[in-house]
Length: 332
Image (cartoon, rainbow, N blue to C red; front, side, top):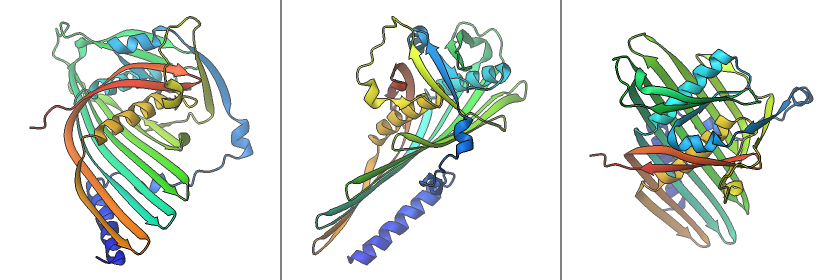
């Protein structure tokens, strides 16, 4: 196979699979055209300090956490935090499909590589309203509301139920050329919470892009209303005396300056996508060599069930790290 023919086949296959299997994910939006903030936007930034109580992390192991955005009113904060806690419950029942491509081009001493990975997740839960209990709530100094929701299977006296469906798209791209590495992460979430008997509910759409572990952009809509949080920069610390295992957290943590929920989701889904990747199966491996030039392509894909639970977390130097447990039951 000639070099030109190989490259045309590779480009065609990759674009076709991405456009057909993941048509709802706009890969073109993950570029590096992030705007440089002007002087007016810099001067309008509001710096906040917030303290996390010791039970912030200890409660995670026995309940499901949801955190509202900073700057929203108390009614919206409660609705938003509750929906987000429900989305964590829904992670226990999910379907995933994904694919990855690794393209490597070696020309003499010059090496250029491109790795792309895309996962699409569907999660859901259908629970009796009386079986859900807000076990604890914390208002942080930043204005964020933290809710801890527990499940009580014995308290199901009524038939009214609450449903949550969630769609998550995780895109990762790593490009390396002449010793320079560029990494782009994009995560898009859409949560729909509704009560069938009441014909009411709430929706949330959240999209954020991280480049080389630095925020490029984020956007949140709750009940079709855009939530503006860009002007807030938050710096967290734990109460003195909190016993938290922070081993390796600084290196693996996600910056929390834009809010706890964004840091938690970025860190959780980064771990989850790495574990999902292990379930992919190699479907293609091709290569071509011409004089000093070597080109290769490795493609993997997968479709499977999964269940994920948030176990714990830690905060070090305003970076948040999560610990998760993921299981992969048989799809049969």
